[in-house]
Length: 334
Image 1 (tube, rainbow, N blue to C red):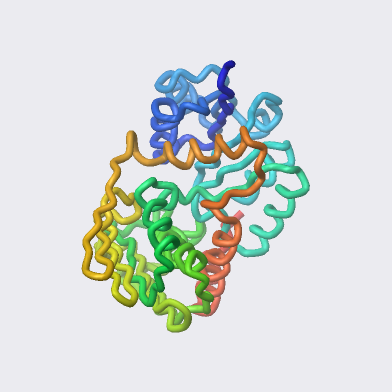
Image 2 (cartoon, rainbow, N blue to C red):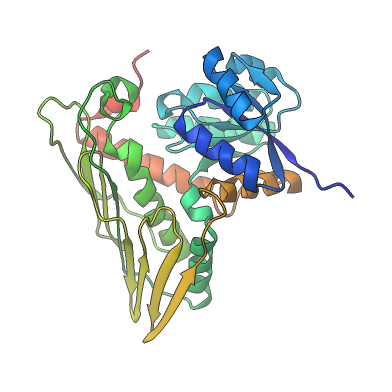
């Protein structure tokens, strides 16, 4: 019996597309890179040669029209996710869209409804929660009925200021919240759901290091109900690269880089357990394998890349930016 392999396509061929393609072509047994699309013919040709892709398209509409594509990984920057997701979902393709999936809750709800009507998957590519070490941690928490009282997590790296960079460009939905805040907010929301804790709206503080900046450069989200959360994000500051999760008789440290969880220390009731598993590639293989398996099994939702978690995180980011005067960052300048 020949094992089924899912036919993947990648739309948008930037840096993250290369990382995804490298893992997909080397470490995903139930899927393969069938097609790619980009508006740049030169980039498409180079990408196809590097990863030995036979089917190439110079427009996203042409890719959507290919009847043999099973699933599309949308790897463009987030201001373009909505239009592209709509295109591919309407064509009956499963969609894995890079984080943040969308900048507005209404867009998530609309696209999630469309995916439901078409009977296909719409998932946000939060690869950190698909790592085996993190999944083992979740199982440990669930089996031992662990109560979590606090989560500290951050994602921040210094970047030299320049409006030509998308992260500093308000016309392209730049800023720390949307670019990297989505990671620790997802961690907080995922563990809150796992332990049955309600998620309230956080107190949010934004600040800027560059006087000419028009985006949120550093953000702090403080959750005071449910699980206490200290969540930070920055595009101008180097922040802690480990996450600390605590509760009665337990302390968990997800080590550097916590968003690529490979080593986790768990100290529970005086006993020290180490959860450790190195990825075969860059970690994208886990989400690609998971999504491929869902498609093969005919599932239209994921117990790992939960739609409810994506929805909650998008809602928090959108409301926080609006309340702090950054509504402009939620819509690209057409």
